Picture 1 (tube, rainbow, N blue to C red):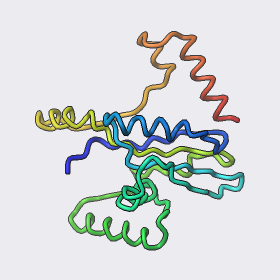
Picture 2: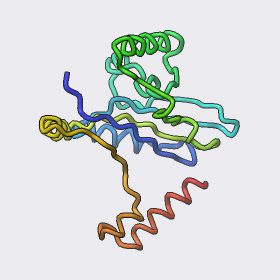
Picture 3: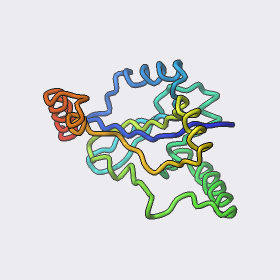
Length: 180
């Protein structure tokens, strides 16, 4: 099975009111086959830091059973309970026995810690199917990934992709939403 590059996107919201817009967009992306939504979770963190997790229902019941919660396994949510925890630990132990380091303290990303108390987040695990041929060509040429990341709208002004006004509006909207 060939899988494209996989990315975890974490989007913050002041309230856990997604109004169905996100699920509809995830479904549109899924139908386009440009990206494949492996898993999507809605996380609400109350004022005391307690977490409530729900699947964003963009996958069929059969896929949900087959995939389980890949995000939960990736970030240690344990959404599948004790059985899921043991299954994940067993898979990690098998990989470690083969000399493959799955997780370590230096590269760990504590996604749940970054979600502010009293807010919500959508966690979306995407497979970038469009990138499979590009990745294969890079690998064939002996290349490898060094890093990746989203570029801030403020940085896009410096290279002429956004006007200062557009970037300022996007940045202020991000800040206002994060502080709400």
